[in-house]
Structure formats: structure tokens, C-alpha cells
Image (tube, rainbow, N blue to C red; front, side):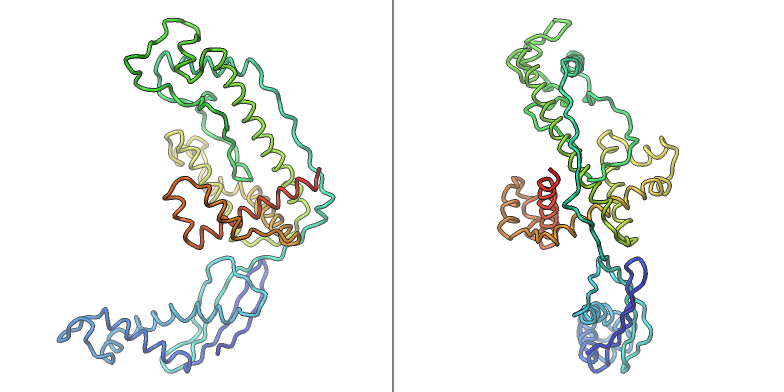
Length: 374
């Protein structure tokens, strides 16, 4: 049976000193020697046939390393049982003393889930941004861009241009994508089939509209406008959710662990890297264009990363207080919506299921807050 001392430190750090008696280690030492012997080939013996004493003498350090690899995590779990410490990162180990025949004494340093205090979220108010109406000028602009690329059969470029991103990724990590029936950024079908007739007109006409998926030019304009309106509503909902989360962040008090801040900074960088990659560039290209190093970018983003973590932890605490749960049936129903068989198969593993359950719980809690802040 292990003995331990637990010392809580600032920034949600916890240090444990754990002692495992040799009586509990002796059988595991033998198992470690046996495992190593199966993989060892010594002169005069076939692989796996060397005497255990010779294997132990020749590979003493490896035996000890194998024992520690198995025992230290197990003893840490036992030491934390019954405590209020819930680790949120991988432990760091430091051996204090150990040799064969003696007790193992080591230190384990972990970051625990921080205590979170959320104020009275039931009086929170957040304004919903006004949805700007789609103008005919916007529709004209998209049609003009599509028509120009269709006539020249130019490579795909965004109708909004291709400038490098210069802003911090969205705190929610979401990206607005239209939900309409047409993909306005996609190039026309290439190559055209022999039965297709290209237009000789210098202005958009029905032939162009049919190539873009419309019945005629008027129908294409209608579909473009509907898609822009759908996208506008979608973005408006994201902005509204962001306003709610900003209010949650203001009333959330927590001593943020450094590991969570660094995780969020890495997530933001991955988001930026994907956006830059969509333009056929590398992150280094972006950094050179900004004349900044990766560390400078992370330093600039750190305040936003801290806000993002507070939002996440605050929302999780509200979920706990409101007893928001995702049942196994809820989780499976969401997985069943996935059409890609390979992607769906990933959710047979426990970790992806755990992350999806958490995301669904956060979404459910946010929807609850929408009802509260009305």
C-alpha cells in the first residue's frame, strides 16, 4: 500500500511524494525481468532462453526503467484516490530514491482541474446583433466575380480576395460557412463537355447562369441571395453566442493553469495554420509577411487565449450547476449522423467519444443560456 503527501501549489499545481514499499514491488520486478528476457538474446542462448539472473545482471538499468514505467502511474492513481485532485495533464516524475530491495520514493507533479467560481449567470444579458440585409450590390458583386472567372476559366480564387489573415482566430474556434445550395467560391466545371455551349456575351446571361447551377439568370440571383441570407443568419447566431460567452467570461473567476493557456494558444495557431494552408501557403510565409516570430504571435494572443479558457471553464461550471448531461443515447445519435464511415469508426475509441460528449454538453449549456438571457 502506497503512502503519500500532497502539497497544493499556485496555478493549480500539485506535488505528491509517494512511497511504494518493496513488498509491493518485488513481484513486478520479476515480471519486468521476465518481459525483458523474452526479448533478449545473449551469447550461447537462443532469444528468450537466457537465465533470468543473467538478463537482470546484464540489463539492470533497463529492468529498473521498465518497472518504473509501469509502477509510477499505477501508484499515482492509487495515491490520488479519494482526494479532490483531478489531473488535467500528464504527470512529471522525479525519483527521490530507489534500488532493488528498497522502497521506491518519488515525486509526481500534476496540474489539477482548477476551482471555478461563476457569478449570477441568470441575470446575464447579451444583445443579439442586427442582421444586415443582403443588398443587390452584394449579389451583383458575386455574379460579376463568377462570370469573370467563368469566361477566363481562371484558377479558383475566393470572391472575397486572397489577402493573408491578420486577425486573431475566433475565440470560439468556429468558422462561418454558408449553408446554401451553391458553392460560390468553386470554379465552374472543368473541362466543359462538348454538349455545353459557352456564352459569347460580355455580360452575365442565362447560359452562364445554367453553368453555375441556376435555371436562368434570375434563378441564379435568387439562389445567391438565399445563400447570402443563410450565411448572414448563421454568422449572426455565432456572434450572438460569442456575446453570451463574453458575458460568462466576465463573471468567471479562476486561477488559470499554464497548461490550459498553452493548449489554447496551440489550438489558435493550428486554426491559423489551416487558414493559411487553404491559400497554398505555409505558416512561415505568414510570419515573414507579418515580420514576427512564432513567440511574438503567441505573446500577442495570450490575453485572448486566457479569455477563451475562462469562457470554456465558466461554461463547464454552469453545466455542472445546471446538471446538464449528455446521455449515451444522445452521444450515439450524434455519431449516427456521421456519413463518412472512416470518420465514424474513430468514435469507437473512448477518447474521441469523450471529446464529442464534452462538446455536446457545452453546446447544450450554451443553448440553455440563450433561453436565460432572453
